Length: 233
Image (cartoon, helix red, strand yellow):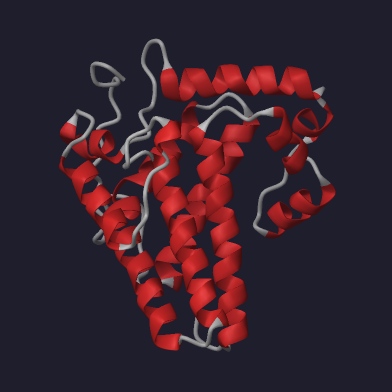
């Protein structure tokens, strides 16, 4: 991120916050009509294209009600079951085989340090992928506010926190998880967003101070066990 002045740093942080917020929404729930309308709008499509994501004619031309139904079914198949499915929780994917494992506690403690609270209405654990993405969005937005107030030291501290959370949590499991999603998904919508999530994480691993490789290579542990959901999931 060298070479950007405070205004550029603020804009970059705001952009990252919006991207993480979108990714959080994608992995939190099946897309509703309002979400689909926003994604199919010209402005959003232009912004997503700049980030490397473009939708094909199936997504753009399918009637909204039919598209929402198809994507809802696919979301359930991928993440909820019944049957074998992908569990978007860090504690499960990093081999603990249960919810509210040690990694969940570590994530919740990290949130608490920055006054971030998980919305109880979402009914998900703190280490759900959507919540971890939302937390990154929260931190990036806070960084942007610090730049806007000319608080360089504060902005850099929040930036460092993002790097710490990325390396301590998301890079240890979400790259591989999103690769699994892209491989398992039958709807291009989920394939493209999973690939976008991987691209964002890989980019941020460099932008926030430490370059990474694929899971399991050169320092990023491959701590995933994407087997069946634990009992109660």
